[in-house]
Image (cartoon, rainbow, N blue to C red; front, top):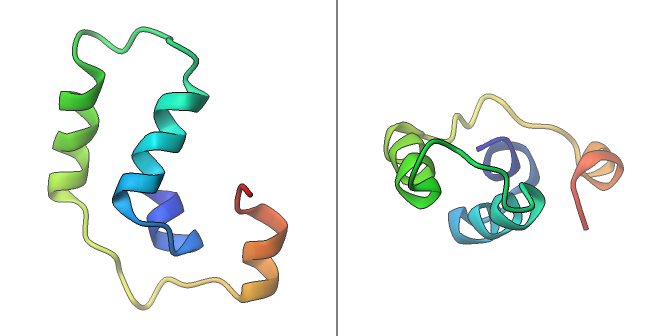
Length: 61
């Protein structure tokens, strides 16, 4: 959700990155169901933004 909030990523791109980064680590059953549940409650807060320069420094490529 941080990637969506601060890096302007889509939910789909963030989920793909999360799945790749966890490197098959277990997450208590269905990982997709778990992350979908988290995203179902998530809303981008427009008041929480970082600059483009900060994005370049911290957001994955």
